[in-house]
Image 1 (tube, each protein chain N blue to C red):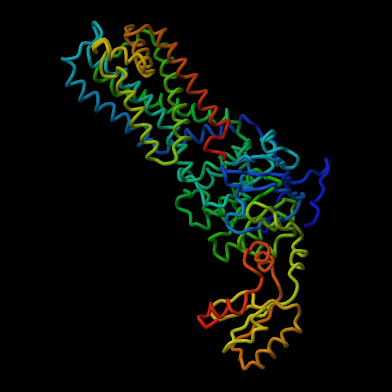
Image 2: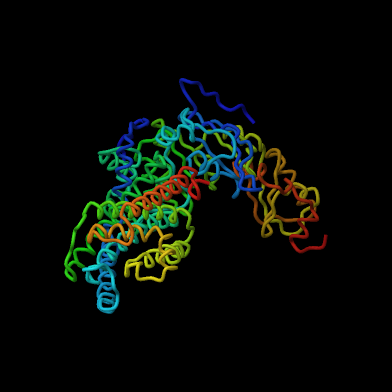
Length: 267
Length: 325
């Protein structure tokens, strides 16, 4: 054991900005260290969907006038990857650290609940966007890109990944076991993203299912995101933006309330 | 029970627990717990499993919220002024935890950053050195032994140089050498001015290290006093013997524990040892093994926390040995 003298104790001056930046850095580094699993694998999955569905459905599904099916499919797959990976980042980080016990070192630190929320959601946005860019970079080789309204692309990508990051925080806090999180993902997130118009235009559905789709907030994210590429959509991008904004606000409010109350984190 | 130490505005208590209760539904984990730990103390928190020690530490650390009452760290309320309270506190949790994504140094850098400290590498290097982790600085925490992980948890609690350090059973499952190493280091921290609050099931450690001790039982404080005063409660001598044959009833009446044919008696003083031996000899009961000792913290602990009577009847002892009553 060392014979060096120890400093007298002091209550260290600390910076809340450093605290927030550290937690955000940790969350970014967490997924970057396993980027093969967190980035490369989702890109491959999206490309497989593109290969299979693009080949099988391209002559059978009517989408937007003047837009080939593969070109139509690419934004949907990009956005689906963004949403699913934004959710996975926050939810998996929280459930793992809860089960491993390492979350205690975050909870004993002087974070506000807003700081914790902000770090997890911002990291989720980054991962979602990184995966989205990766998917697009590969998928663009299969169909020509179009950027009719790129600002809408950015707005819906960020809003969608923010909402999914907040849902990931909610799921990660709520779930006590991995299979509970898997149930959340498999029975809620996955169906909602698959049935949101990723692979089809809702105008091709029977009227009943068109109306059902309009109750799915994921539909508006996909549709608004796709509008940024083709200036065509199933509903007005402003309607989509309004719905997504409400969904974002609700998910943020629930996640922040859970953190503020210490629900399942502080007994 | 002694009067709690008085803290002033100029020298607030390191930890002040004011009438804290904690209920989980119908279960009362803590009931009106009151205690004050002065700055610079080495304080012990003891109790059987389920007494509420970890619950109390969780409330102090902000990991749980009291159903009623108030806790302050150096005068800062742990709920209303949680930021200042947590900056002043370092906590070593009971459970062995680590983040498998990062190395030792990364873990400590993150922990420093969580407390708002940038550029803390010089102190991190010192902590690694004091805890014998320098060579493991770049090793992933997954690859550490249990003892190393335990040391890392201590390091994480110290990176922000907290004035108050709480250790929840830090030597559970730890080998003798590491236990001694940790205690040497913790004692040095205390000599340098850090306040230490310790829970442990190793009562000999608490007796050796702690100046003052609180004992919890079923969520309530059953004793709160200096270690010396607690030891003085259980005066006298402890006689442990293995009789060959059945001792007389008068001797059996003094037995406080009986295990595998070995009897433990509580005596008022050493002079009674001779009397006990004489009574056994008079009854034709030889003694194969004999040991005489003074009361220790374990005796105090058992007396205050056990539901069993202090001594057992002769019939109970015969029954335990399988003999006719």
